[in-house]
Image (cartoon, rainbow, N blue to C red; front, top):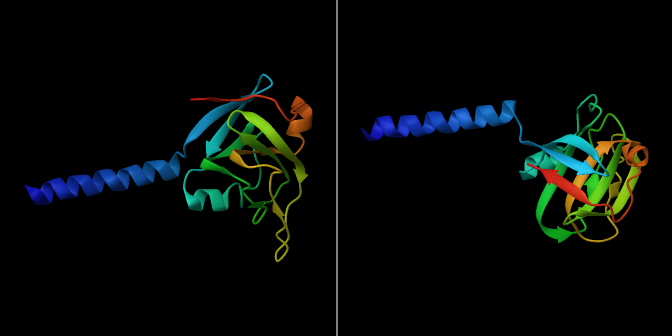
Length: 144
């Protein structure tokens, strides 16, 4: 009986890992009436990889990095193949924006960080912040 229960738990665990890899966590983020479908980077490995090594990011898509405490997190563009806007968020409002952050080249990985501590970071296609008129102080709503 113990072996069957152990086998069942192991199977459930493997299925969960497989499903999560095939279907990453996603949510929707709204800024100034514009809604973005975003992947959620939860683990340290997901946060380190970010959007790296993808060939493109669909319009209206992005990635959000939630943190459990406020800090001036450093981001880099290692493995990025397209430029980004990085929107730095504290609680539910934009506190800084790094626009049109260029791709990095091997051996040259500049770091980007907000001017104040944040607990969320949103990456969108370069030019999106200007296109939607995002500014410091705008509210950011996460729609579950």
